[in-house]
Image (tube, rainbow, N blue to C red; front, side, top):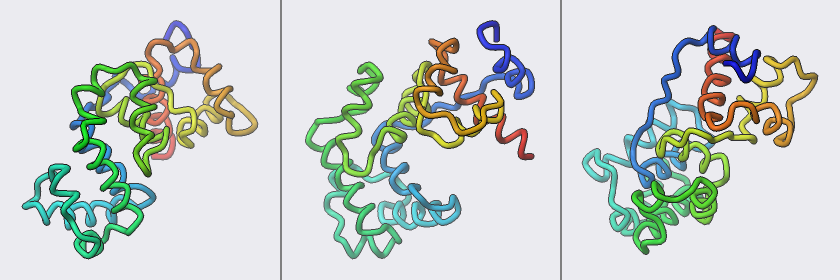
Length: 192
């Protein structure tokens, strides 16, 4: 609040910081793929059908790799997403990734590691860092919600480019995850 008067107003309007940390890396990445580019209700329905193949539980990587294309398709998972989910399972089965390993790695290494998985980009890596691994200093510079909230809050004429997002958020270090959360919350409050 002392470092950025604009953020001070946002924090006062939004109230206490309540970032919820959930799940393990494997589950978080799989859910990210299931929910990619879908409305929440549609994605949740596909997730329920997918998990029903495993009695409602998150499948082990080996179980995912044993699924046929037809089984994926029957749950509503597209061929492309099935490829991505298999890629996640392959990385965890082969030992290239593990929840324990990712929790111990610096942020930049986590991003490098998980973006090797087909279908996982930088934005998903940032969400993993923030909402699964609980990292305090993540700034998803490509997130439209962050960029638009910055545009509105800081009175910018256009959406800021990633370099400008970095510059504006520099005073928030080492708590840029909190700053990001507050920008998302600001958008929720303003639109309610």
